[in-house]
Length: 398
Image (cartoon, rainbow, N blue to C red):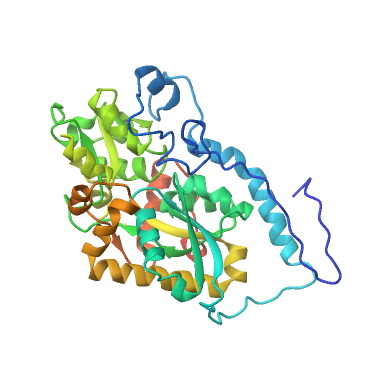
């Protein structure tokens, strides 16, 4: 906390630390963070030549390539600054004596509380927007604005700086933030993978004419993921091990979801890890699914989550409860009437009605799956993404 001046006000008035954190980890082609579908993602039709691939998409296992900081490394470099400021905030909140968190009293739908929520582009953000569109959050007294983000790594700084009240994040980004000492807590689950191989919203695709016919053929190949050292390569590595393939033999490169299929068609990568709607879009262009990482790593894996700062969670229990209720109502609606959700996807996810009709939807559930978090934490340690164990019980909010 050296270098962060503060004092305790004897009158116990509120003190605020303003943290200026650049939320530019995953800015697509220089645009503001969250402006595109994924890290490094630009328009789907933008050309991606070999020069761009070698200079902009850093590899994970290519030992001879010059080092370019990955998304996670950029995040980690900013962690000391953010962690110190966050620690100062926690100390300041204790000035003048402790106080218990208020009990949820419920919000007034006639005077909704405005909350900014980031969620990953594609099906995750479309799902959240669907709940907003259907009025499920408004009924709980919330005025939710959805900020489409490149992923959890890009959204976490927005939570710390106060620009976001809640953020959708994959579980790897969430655990990494906690491991780095950020005062983050998991308040609700997000997307879940399928229980059945071949029926999931995430898959590794290869070109239709590729000589890669089975997972064992991926050894020594290049696979595109949207963010290095994150949920994609963690689950792919686990799935490859199930097929007897050494993950260290695979070269991962970082490319935005919309740009992966064009790169695959040009032969600049051997395989592409996609989520919906890009899995279906890729299949319609002739690509073949080869691996189902979420399912093959752990059937029913909880992939997504929603995060808040510990301080916001403690001080706004009624907002957290209302948000959970809105998510649960959205999940029930999509489960009971998936066709209505599919009908909304052309507008919400900017896909054709044909893609909306045929794509595989994730599962959404009401409760956080602690066993999934324990599995992901174990895989993160095994693959060197974190060095020390993370206390899962401390991550999950009450």
